[in-house]
Length: 172
Image (cartoon, rainbow, N blue to C red):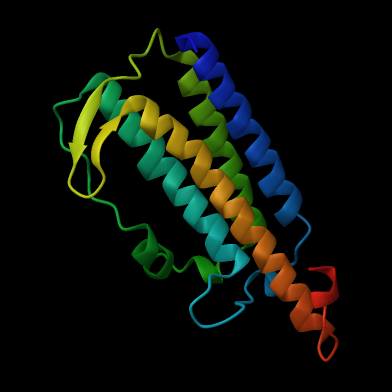
């Protein structure tokens, strides 16, 4: 796959996943969005807050550094801790979703402005090993899909909780 088609494919995937995330989130009221299936799971609000954090501070930022300043160190990140420290559960899910959409548009504009990026530019990551720019681009798309799956699971768990004492396992 050539550079332009790889980039266009990734942009299309990021657009589609954003649309799916919006469709699964935009009509959920604030109280419902703050519900956690259990003590270890994130609420819908926390998931969207995490996606916003990652859009701003991980994928686009690190891909930019790798493509344009490959010798610079990446800033440290701790996405799981950020969800707690930044109090995402207390925020308005619709505001977070809008902010995520704004950041996604910035990301897509930035990606489309890249001129013949070298997807093989690589950097050693202390935990992930060698990461190429193309790996980061692919991981960005996969990250969205992982959280679409998480959001879908949240919806299933919320449906089952509200359906109690009835059981939805027949559908599975």
